[in-house]
Length: 448
Image (cartoon, rainbow, N blue to C red; front, side):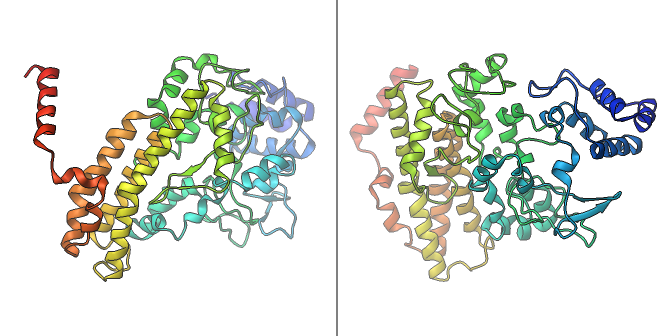
């Protein structure tokens, strides 16, 4: 990154509006997207902001980013996003201006009404509602508040609180969590996917942007994508993906591979782009037992339409059948039975009402929250290793060798009904014929 010299800073303070335009135009780089014009357009108030920030060397890179943005090209300056009224709850008096520290989707909606409405209806906008959940108890109480401030809340969002002067307070800010609760009462932040101050579309199309939150042991969507043929093709043919294109339509603008955005939000020849990330998702894979969402048939139909841009009808329909079977296998064999055991243990007083103070609660949490999710998410995104070894193998291993013994130690006989299910019948042993068949297979396969 090239920084502006003191000489340039001094010039910036002294030049006229036209001079400031020339200065910012010189800051244009090879990274400018196609949405940006040759030079940014400054109104008088924006020029005041630019001059002051350059002179004091505060957030100078914001100016460079804005100067190469579509906002800069169209003359959408600092006041358009940061101006507040004196009576606003987030009003902040700053250098003679009444501003807000925290522009929100409500501010973006002044120009991007449809996008803001779609986002507001999405699960992303509600991500901060995890506060008070089991996950949040783990972060805030078991681990500790400072860990949650820079961990959980940086993805889910926090409730941003202001001091008497309208300045955000530490512990709630900085935060660009997708479901952030803003001082003006709105939910979410557009800058989670469209980082300020360039706001370029290319970033929202980049899988790594989604991977900022959708990765790791409990929701490894980025790693699953990278393992899948989708991710392999994206890595191999990235230069053919037209990521900078203003209009980005699978099957027309690009054909080499999909990204997360392709399947979940971006345009197709038959569908418009949407900012509701759940519009094409039929199952929820987050909870202990997965369930199909409201209007799931319509949502599945939209996702199927995306798939058909690249795959044949038989391929698509069969894959969805196999995916549904995998989710239902997890639900019926492991998810619902283990939950029933935990409910019975609590009802019998074998474990306390306090989360995570009994060992089996940790085992159960990882069983569904980590391993069970990995199995289901791997199945949903064509990630065979996550479906198998990081998923169902871990689920089975810990269900049979940790969860069941721990439950039995707390209340003998509590798992008898569960283990009597046909799905667990293999534990009663193999017949002599089945054992002989298996031995013959390995002799033939490995010659030993």
